[in-house]
Amino acid sequence: MECSYLNESIKVILVVPGAVKSNIANNVAGYDLSPDSLFRRFTQIVQERIATSQGPRAKTAEGFSQHVVSQVLKPNPPEYMTLGGFSTVFAIAQWMPRFLVRWGMWRIWNRPNQP
Image (cartoon, rainbow, N blue to C red):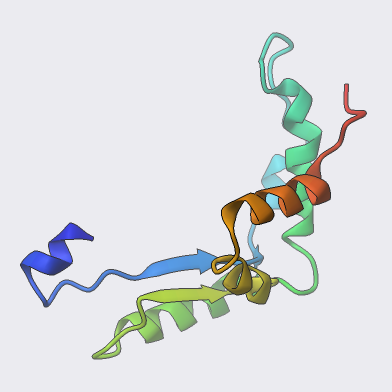
């Protein structure tokens, strides 16, 4: 971002993707970490989260990339873009206090009874 102050022809755009359909859910099936991994107990949670992002509200990867490219190539591109499934939630969350966003995410994704 500092470069944009040095040269006004440099444009910086923050792209915050919502749910976008991809092959990530297909590739994560059957994936497992080694038994001594510190992160192994989170594998199922991560896989569930990935599956959620591939739902019916997810934007196709092609549609997502076409929209981003069309916006980036404009003479005055936006500084912030969020698109994809649930992107309205992310757009609202950017203006909320961080502690409230973290608390909400914790309530949604916390699984206290996981092994």
